[in-house]
Length: 218
Image (cartoon, rainbow, N blue to C red; front, top):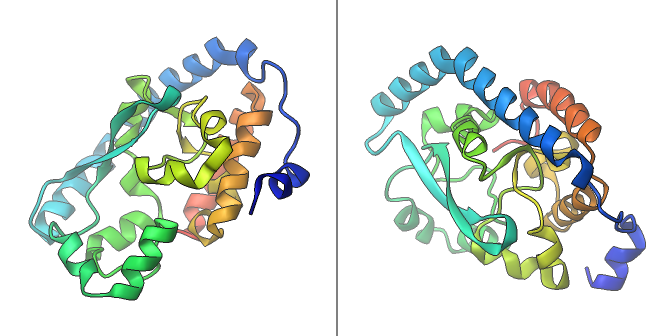
């Protein structure tokens, strides 16, 4: 989808969108991440044990992703794949091509048994609460993207990277991985242009049923 086609369906940029709520947003991030880590600590421990018993490799996987402003950082995730994932995926040329194109695969041969359940309910993302506390991420924002994905945004890349990536966002409540890649790009830019503090609160509340239903996660 080219820029004119995108502009026809995207809202116009709001001047200073989100600036007045930056402090409130950061407070929401700190409080939400702290409470989440405390309340979920028993679950996090059980997940760590399950991962260690299920397959060899580290419990936490560090994914190199784009930061606000164009820098990079390591986003923390519970490991859901086998340690030789690249070798496994190389055995499936069609899946490899699809992964390079969309950065998502249904029935990914690299995913472990425990990993499938963690992904279904987005439990693998919970360690990113630490990234939120560190100020690298926000509870709500555009999708976390790898450096190789920046090219997909074309002229929208700078706008897309003007805010922190989120643990959840419009993409999460609208269909998650079931969304076509172009549609995910649209939701990312739509959030950047229309974000407000109360929108963040609404997205957080809507994320709960979306995650519990496990739809669109793989």
